[in-house]
Length: 118
Image 1 (spheres, rainbow, N blue to C red):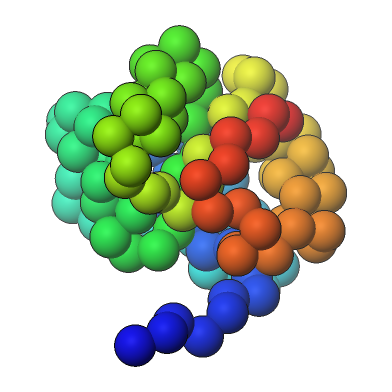
Image 2: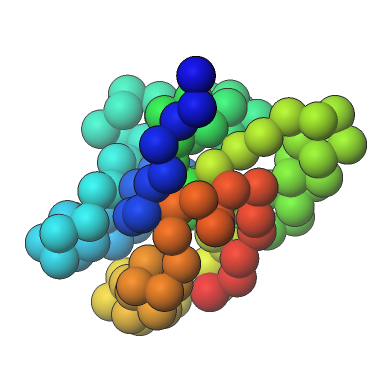
């Protein structure tokens, strides 16, 4: 069965991302799920990425080194994820401002297996 194409990126925020980011995105009409709301606090980075992929959500994190390595592991092993967004630590409003540039220009399908930097 072929999955229908997906237009809007749905996000899953890693536990080190301020929950205000998801609140601000939801207020703008985007679908954003926090690690806290998914009851996945303290899961490993690999478990977080696997969950995001299973839920068809791009993962937003500040953890550049670990998620770049996980991305490469996924690519090397032929696994797929729904995208990784890596943000430099900034106030929540600045992260959202930068995220909106991507969310308004990149489709969920285009984000597949991609790493993007904010």
